[in-house]
Every structure is written in structure tokens, then in C-alpha cells.
Length: 93
Image (cartoon, rainbow, N blue to C red; front, side, top):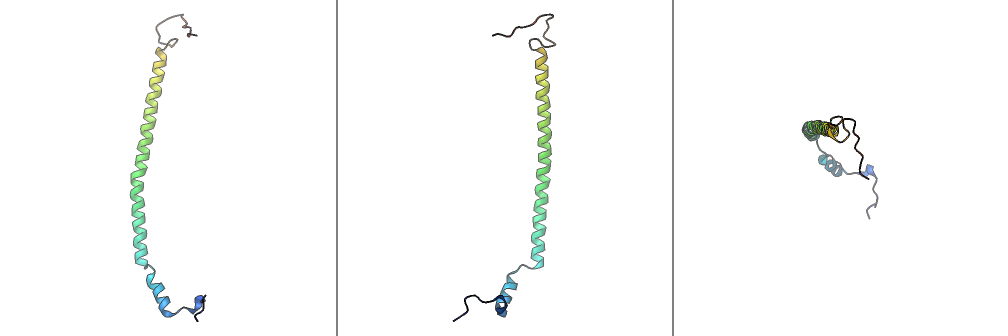
């Protein structure tokens, strides 16, 4: 009857050979690593500029909205450019 829990030192040469053959070679590991690095570089080359351009567009549009709100506020009642002098507009109750 075989031993249910063989020790790791009791490996047969066939098992050792099979284990070694199943491991990827250094060439395969190098190729996989290079492929992963190239993929990461391509992703970074696409994502980083997109984030920078998106941030610049956001800041530009926020500045335009802020300027538009400021200019609209100048012409609003009681604004600096509402065209009246010494007149206060009472807000409706």
C-alpha cells in the first residue's frame, strides 16, 4: 500500500523532470515581461495625455463659466453696469 503523504524528498526522477519541463524558460519569462512593459507603456502614452487634455479643457470651461457669471452679474439689478444711479431695487417679498 503506498504512503498517503510522501515526503518531498522522495520524488522520483520522472516527477522532477516533469516539474522542470513545465516551468517557463528564462526566454519565455523575458518575453512575457517585455510584452507587459510594452503594453503598460502604450496605455500610459494614451491615458496620461488624455487626462492632461481633459483637465485643461475642464479648467478652460470653468474659467469661461466664471467670467460669464461675472459679466452677467455686472448688468444685474444693483450691479455696477445696470445703468441707474442712486437707485436701489427692492427684492420682491
